[in-house]
Length: 108
Image 1 (cartoon, rainbow, N blue to C red):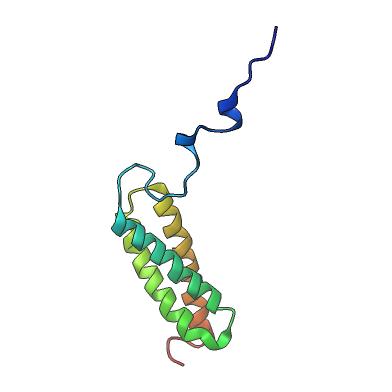
Image 2: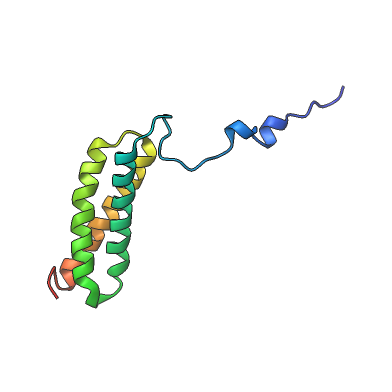
């Protein structure tokens, strides 16, 4: 009795290869994708700039922008990957704006 190899378990076929996409439902959502990516980037800038105390205006403004945009983006999001990026961006924006305000606020 021989063992039958199961090649599809070891390596998926070409049509099922992993692709990084925000459109997991198969339909294009360009506006929602742009909003999710912009929220993530604003959150990233706000969070990273909190490590430099003198950059508190950057973290405050980008955090506020990212938080507001992220709330709207979460409201109109369609797929789970979009929502995941939104939540990461929202949390990073909130931390950025909170620490930016704690370090000196919106004005230099």
